[in-house]
Image (cartoon, rainbow, N blue to C red):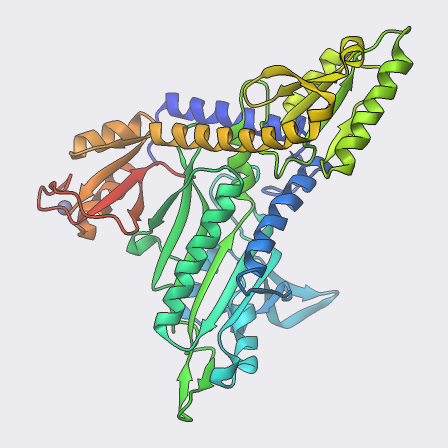
Length: 479
Ligand code: ZN
């Protein structure tokens, strides 16, 4: 990609900020001595666990079952589908030795699990009564990234790849599954208060082995697209080489139709970068490891009284299901505690001093708007629950607003180039011919992101060839 010195320094500034905030907010430490690998710290791990819980619930309630497949894939399995291996070949880590012995068949560390899962599908699926199969797993996957690695965003070990794989009797059912996956992922990102575009990828950017790919993209604060989820319609690409067949009602053998979809650790990178402000993280309450932190403000004289009241409020919140922390560290001032928990994005702060005890109330500070107000003791639970909903909604609306500001409608090639060079995403009417957009990727190094689903063609001409437009196309820079 062609990058000016200014862009490189802008990107470096953003990445320095991002790497630093991951570490100071105790999410992720990228200093591990293997390139492209980092460590999830306790606070970050909890955040990861809470987001995982949401996705697990969404998958479970739509009939997916969780499974766990081995990490090692034999070479002959990985190579069974030619398009698939062609694309992944350069990114695979190989295990070639076991102890002191060279292995006869080498093993790949899974870059993705189609070729681990589908040989088993061919054993499990016998009859139409066995269909559909809808499974998922949460595993680490390895990719020998040759591009510059980035903490969480582009790593060599993706530590929680959430991949689903389905098999169906008919094409229609499989395509319905693609629609269900779009619904599930939309709900998931809504729960993270993340804005997204749902785009059908151009032909040359689809998943290796897919008939088509649909992706969820968000736009980072620096204007770059970040892919946060993908859904693939596989048709019979894999069921044929892997012999995944079933007997239909008439006793005929047929190949199944398949889909797969996955989400990496990137949504966490997105939610950190997109919701953060100059003070640090701002986490949506539903996934915040600590939803409310209580800060006591006392002197030597009133310490006992204030702490007693803090403990009562702590128990009240805990008993009502809040993830709450009472920060009773002795050697820190309230001010430095404010700073610490604001940096970590705790959505609600409860401040309690002499005044609050006397008036039987608490002072509540919301992280997203940096606003304070008093709440009567008897109304704490109701008010905090209401506040959590307000914070989520505010973060979501703010993030969607920021994303929309980064997308501009463009009508000519010049406008497209100008827009993307300004760090925005261009949305343009397009004739539908690949040659018109492929040219842009080749000449400018920008990325063609794809076309939105179910959008009426604009009554305008193609930004490039000026013929009648059939679709909308998104173009920008990308991670
Ligand atoms: Zn055109």
